[in-house]
Every structure is written in C-alpha cells, then in structure tokens.
Amino acid sequence: MECYYARMKIVIVGAGGVGGYYGATLAKAGHEVFFIARKENLVAIKRRGLTVKTSSGDFTVQPPCGETSEPFGVADLVIVCVKSYDTSGSLGLFESSVGETTAVVSFQNGLDSEDILFRRFGAEKVIGGVCFIGSRVEKPGVIAHSAYGHIAIGELDGEVTERVKEIAVAFGRADIKCKISNNIKRDICAKMIWNVGFNSICAILDCDAKTAAQSDKVKPLILSAMLEWIAVAREMEVDLKPEMAQRNIEVTVKGGEVIPSMLQDRRSGRKMEVDIFNEKVTALGDSLGIDTPVNRTIAGLISHLSYTGS
Image 1 (cartoon, one colour):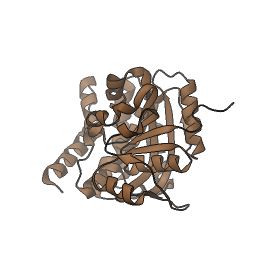
Image 2 (tube, helix red, strand yellow; image 1 turned 45 degrees about the vertical axis):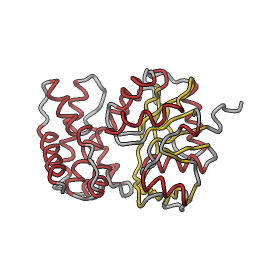
Image 3 (cartoon, helix red, strand yellow; image 1 turned 180 degrees about the horizontal axis):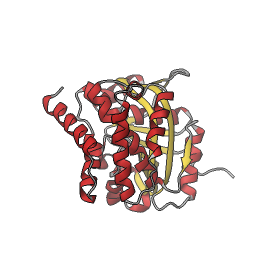
Image 4 (tube, one colour; image 1 turned 180 degrees about the vertical axis):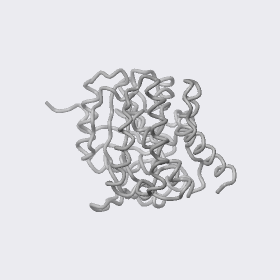
C-alpha cells in the first residue's frame, strides 16, 4: 500500500547545522521542503541554493525559502531547529503552515521545547524528537556534516501511531536512520546526558568533543557532570542508568569530529544555551534536594565567558 506521506510537504524552521542538514537531505530525496531562514543564510540559499558537505560527497539543493512559511501553505510536517531561546519567538513564523493534520516535531536541545509547542498548537499536533548529529554552518548556505545523523521520534504519550510510522518512512526515503520510540520523553532526557557532559565543557576548553573525551584529565569532569544529571533524572522517575554516562563517552571517542553547538556559538559570538543544560540540571537538582556542584561550577564558568564576551 502506498504511504500517504511518501512525498511530504515539510517546513524546516531554522536552516543551521541541524535544520540545514536534515532539510537538504529530505529535499534531495524528493520531499517538498521549505526553509525558514534569515539574514545572510537566507540570501545565500536564495542565490546559490543550500549545499551540504559530507564525507560521502557534497550536494546542493535549490529549495524555496523565506522569513516565514506563509507562501508555502499548510505542511504535513514542521521540523523546529532554532535555538531553544528562539522557540517562542519563532512560532509565528510557521503557524500558517500548521493545519488540521500537520505534525510538529522539535530537533532542539533541552527539555522544554515540546511544552512550548503544544501550548501553542495543542498536544495532539506535537511529536517528540531527538537527533544525534555533528554538523555546522561552514558559511551562509553551506552545511558541513561530520558525524552521525540518526534520529528518534515518538508520540509524547508513547503510542506508536500511523502518522509516526509514515513520518519514519519519509525519513527513511532520505536514508536518515529513524527510530520509532515508545518512550520519547526518556530519549529526550537521555540525550541530555551527552549535552550536559560535553557542550559547556567543550565551549570552555575550545575543543571538539572527541578531544575532550580522550583527555584523562577532562574525562572525569565530563563523567561527573553526566552522573549528576542522571541522579536528578532518576529522582524525577526517568529511567536513566548510571552506565549510560560512560557509554556516551565511549561512543564519542569512536565517532567522527563533533563540535558541540555551544562551542560553535562561542566561536561565532552568539548566545550560548547553558540555561537548558547545566543550569537546568542545577535548578532541577535544587528543587529536588540534590546537590549538583559540578554542573553549578560549569554553568558559572560559562556565565563568566558570556559576561566578558570571551
């Protein structure tokens, strides 16, 4: 039976390292993809298309794009890839494309994006998502992909629905490995393990994740930050295992180069997302009576870097 979503209308909100890679890959596979972009990136995509550089070869797509998705009309799927602090401000840019049967999924960092989306569009429209990828904007209109690319999606209530299956088929058509999860909320919390351990520390040290993971002096700090988050999550009745911390480090050592998003932001002079990583762990820990000294220290160092503009 032909899948209803064999060729989907997709809006990508944010054409950065994540949105640019997934959107271009979906467009290359034949899906109808519209990019919401801004400033130099939008100008570059309009003029020259969107190029993705990968180890297996480069490709360029010529997608429609704009500052809002209004010209595109109603979409089958909206993928939100803006920075976490821009989520609320981006809602009006794509709300005209959210129709009765549109699914909205976030590939953002942190724990709160889905709540923001379903407060605006209704819980029935929102699907949870997690992506595992090393990619960055090399220059406006050019995405450099260096590692991974697999994703997980799932209904927030854990049900495996037909729409999730159909969306997974659409990603599969683009050769994007997509896991259907029956516990996507846990998966989102599990991804926080990596982010809490690597994002801020790599931003402070100005090094990629593999370099940090291979350092005998840095690795214990990464592990401690991760274990603090796991302890907090377990107190919240999220089933994360302590051994997941070491596993995240081992996978990072074996993988390709990953420049964490906060380091990319620091190098570009942009705001860093420490509030959704280490600061979030500390705030949740305080509310639960769990001490998180490593995450508190890391958050303080990042705050100093942000304050001084270093």
